[in-house]
Amino acid sequence: MSENLEITKLDPSLYNEDLAPIEHKDRTWGWFEIFNVWANDIQSLFGYTLAASMFISYGLNGWAVMAAIILAAFFIMILVNLSGAPSVKYGIPYPVMARASMGIRGANFPAMIRAIVAIFWYGVQTYFASTAVTLLIDAVLGTGSDAETYLGITAIGWFSFALVWVFQVYLFMKGIDWIRNFLNLAGPFVYAVMIVLMIVIWFKAGDGLLTAVGDIFEGAGDYEGGAIAAFFTIVGTMIAYFAAVVINFGDFSRFVKDEQELKKGNLWGLPANVAIFSFIALFVTAGTAAIYGENLTNPAEIVDRVDFLPLTIIAAVTFFAATIGINLVANFIPPAYDLANLMPSKIDFRMGGLITAVLSLFVGALWVAWISQIGIGQFVNTLGAVLAPVYGIMIVDYYLIKSGKLDIQQMFSADPSGAYWYDNGWNKKALQAFAIGAVFSIATVWLPALGFLSGFGWVVGALIGGAAYKVLMPGKSA
Image (cartoon, rainbow, N blue to C red; front, side, top):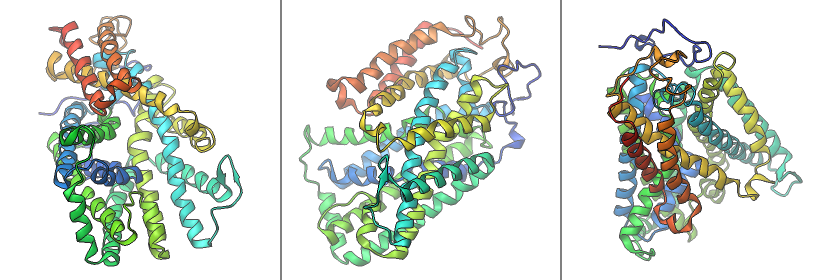
């Protein structure tokens, strides 16, 4: 039986149409849309490089590497099934869901942290997407890479950056249906081109490809700490890669028709998708070893070595689509909702997206000359790490404290006697649990002694935050 999601009493400081629950009859997403959310998240330039490097950087047997990658994907699938299910049931985005545990006003705290992280990486990814356009223009016009630069970027590079920035804003302003259509096209398209690239590499490598694949699968076994340490390092690295989308997965699952479709999409989009994409990355990397005598893990460098103009053009379009896809999924939609939650009466989803785009413009423009040089990534990684206990708190609150039942009316009410008002709109016990978990999460970023935890620092931070919250708030209910 479906929940009644109609809001009868609301506070304008907490409500706008973009934050309001989506009625079940108005939802259009199925498993294929969720699959493509993950396809676009995985198929970025960085995602390919990461998958390829797993096979050659740890000296581990190829089957063990594949098992580690798939294990991480299954683990993330469980996490997003947990965080996505409440939004399927109630049709609300992440910052509204956070009100139940953090408080009506307190939800802005984790929402803004998530927004800052996303805005930063949105700017960076916009720059990297523009390099694909630059590659395309240089290939067609035959311009050189030794042109004069301003802030480390050539004139063609600046034109490409502006073009990508405008295109993303245009796509976003067209609304969520256009974004869905773009993701549904980009996911299969990138797969098709990667398969073509694999076939081209295989043709050029001949029988040497299978020999190179065999060499990679044998593994050198020279990772410090041994095979077990290498295995769990790969698992942790892959978990860390996906962690950014885990906490706000409700921003996407709220459009899904039912929980069965969500789980099916996550199954095909994570374990199955990661396994297939990793195999493609493995064969392409092995082919480059057979052809060029070295393992190349950067797709742009591979295409450049192939030196075939039609492939260069297609690849440039692919890199562009893939990077735009992950930018929309991980870095554009989340801050749009987060900023709307800050002042719903003044900021809607589109305005939140525009604010994101404007702020990220400066990040992308200054990335080469300044931001990438000053180590700001450590600061942003710290903000990302402190979101871990928030995930634990939200999951424990929904499933263990409130038994999967929320009062949707109260989530949009500023009544001091309301279920989620707590103390002046802030749940201080949630903040205490957050602080306990955040100490550990931050330590994994800054203390070299904890560096071995890699992506597991996020998991442990979530467990600590959730456990502390359960101890501090026993027996509470909606």
